[in-house]
Amino acid sequence: MTSTKISDISWYHDFPPFFTLQSNLDTRRKQIDAWCSLIIDYCRLKKICTFDVNDASKFPPFFNAKIHRQLDNNFIHILLEELRIRGHIEWEDKNKRRCLIFWKSPEEWAKTIYQWITSRGMNGTVCTFYELLHSDDTRSAEFHNIDSKLFRRILNELEKRDQAIIFSENGADGMVDEVTKKTLSNIPLLKTKASPRDGEQWRQRLKEELQALIQYVKNNKDADNDWFRLESNQEGTRWWGKAWTIQDMLRYEFDIEFDIPVTYPMTAPEIAIPDLDGKTAKMYRGGKICMTDHFQPLWARNVPRFGIAHALALGLGPWLAVEIPDLIARGVVVHKERETASGNSASSMK
Image (cartoon, rainbow, N blue to C red; front, side):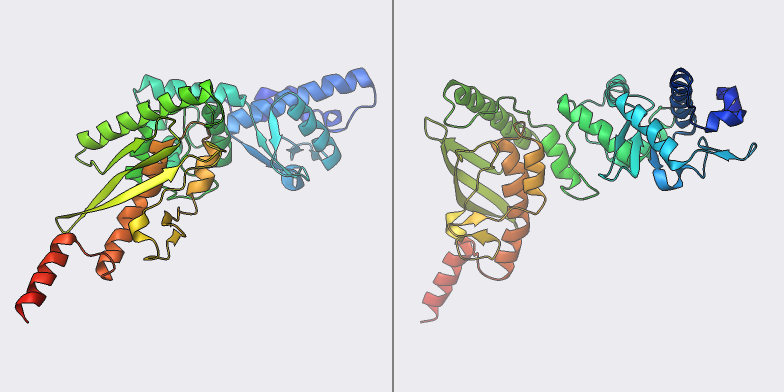
């Protein structure tokens, strides 16, 4: 059975001088080393992931009720700063009042979680934070029930390694729906960061864009959800095509177009539907669709991995799904068959 007592981790926690910063430099060095080891061991034992410096002196390990001793805030700051230097904490605020605790480094945590995902054949799947942190499936995992802020920090490390994509950030649940999350997870990620001004690198980027688009179209066909076609000029800077959506068993088809910005991929392409220009408030001049509030932050977080296919999946697809039914209901968009039927009816009444 694993011990939960500090005295089993460190006998000197019951030694009163241990709570007073020693004046002798050699003794102080050993004291700080001992405290750092104790803090990390205790946090691992109790799965403590954050500290609030204002309250830390009121609780173990900085407080020992048995001997009526506690560390002052100055000593606590010295210890936490030493732990920061050793890579065991990160401050959450500029005033250094709160910090994340790493009893394992972010790199070690990332490796642990990735190995857990891989061992269960879950690579490429979409999971919620709750499923990974609190579900029965992770009950035996070391990261089960750890603090959500620490977990986000670990996932950021996985993102750096191109081993994960975070679809929701800063508590913004619902940034994309579950269907879109699954769709995105099946679109190849791009590697080359290049714009049309970058010569050979742009040609490599364009190759990756086409591969991702081809896979996305294939995925859509396999899911019986084929909804767009695209082509481009030889340079890959100008794109146009068709997009369609099915409403009441009728297919509504629209011309689409966009240019690749000179600052691409830092700047996402602005997709336009010229036929709908001026017909909805959810458009800019020229028929450029308004992306959701979540699109730009998500795109920015995933440069250069997101490309044209991702812009379609995150931007145009959801826009069509929301706006076209509304435009139809308001009579702004009328299907060609119904326009023809209405015209014939009007002629017969004359």
